[in-house]
Image 1 (cartoon, rainbow, N blue to C red):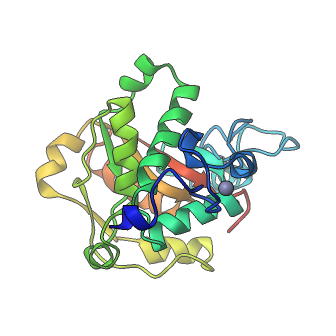
Image 2: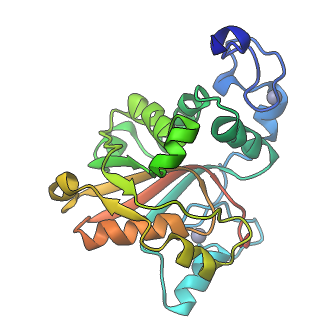
Length: 249
Ligand SMILES: [Zn+2]
Ligand SMILES: [Zn+2]
């Protein structure tokens, strides 16, 4: 029914302008150009785009963490775009506009991004399990789907990697991170995830790739990476559609 009202493929997923169905990522020309694709230099730790004027290999946030002696728990991050107006419209349409179909398109972007960074064979051997960041069961009931799981599905469909969307559970609802500082974010998310008991043997020694829509300060990804590593995961990387610009905290 929704398809009749709003046929996927006929409208730009960002601005809603009419497009033909051959457009890459279902974006119109303007939005394709306006999207901040992460094709330049990026932070060697979290994958966030670096400014041309940035002298080092690390973004401001990762450099500060390193100096402060508390490095991130995750190993490596990747992001397709730098968060801006276009990425925001697409994420909002998916999460709050009921546009579940956008998940698959973002999965395609994630797949293309990783294949631009790594050879297909290399990527196929890099990870044992792909896990989308879970949302709480109450939020799942309200929204009808976990957006990260839809993105992950589109990603594994194209890369052939193995996913396990049920490996992690969100044990409690947390307040929105918007407006919270780094310490408040860490406290807000602390203890909010658990590994499903039946999956514990699979986590031991595994190289894991987490999938989410956006990377901001890393408190959510770090909380999950800490949990997975305490259960024996060998490495925990993440891949998101967008990364918020450096120093947005
Ligand atoms: Zn557009
Ligand atoms: Zn970084």
